[in-house]
Length: 273
Image (cartoon, rainbow, N blue to C red; front, side, top):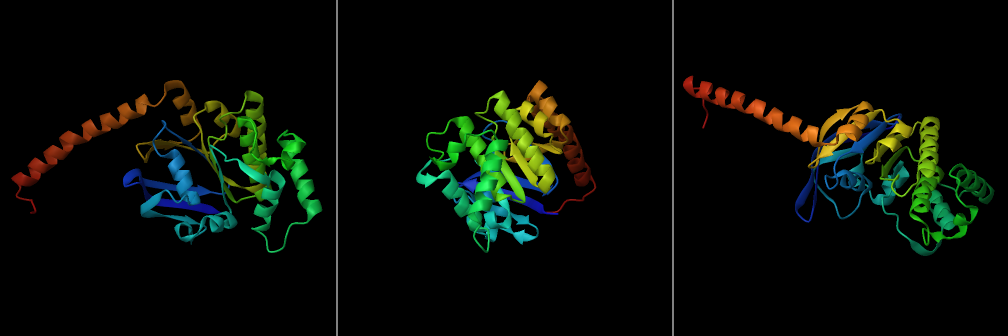
């Protein structure tokens, strides 16, 4: 079993703190949904785990199977078994989809993958995702539709076979039929390979298909609430305002207790300068 552990993670961009103490533990057989309003650190969390150079870790740790992820280069994180499906996949002119995938696979192996095995696996996974066969021979993401780019990210996941995958709004740009296909393929791969998943999405429908084991709500760079899949349905029905109200109520409830405690200590002479 594989385990990703995040402890007290603080991350800044250009001296602005984005993540403010994230604690999270994900095992290989689990699916963790990450939800929250836009601009609250969800994509930052995934990019930081994968090693994006723009994000500066100022405090905390990330380990994968006990190894310090923050000490690894991006390619080392990939070879260790981490994968990031991007929200905005980049186009790479001059490099075919198949050449890119073959190079990525070989970078994780001691001996190069055989041509027959590679082609067989590529064709099988293209068929699972109901992608056009010619996409394998086109330049990486060049001229792809939004939905084709997202399915191509899942194709990479299937071909690279990571231990742990992070998906950043992989469902955006997919119509309902493609959404169902991608979710089924993900669920099948997760069950067969006991792969850990961390999935960022705003849509209850996608989570309904993949059935997360855990759900976390991120607001202002912190995980403020965690539960099971039922939390996804509550967010879909009621939004996030009730969470803000709940946090405000908790602060109000704590304030009189704090004041009373201070007064009591002062009366008893139990103060320390």
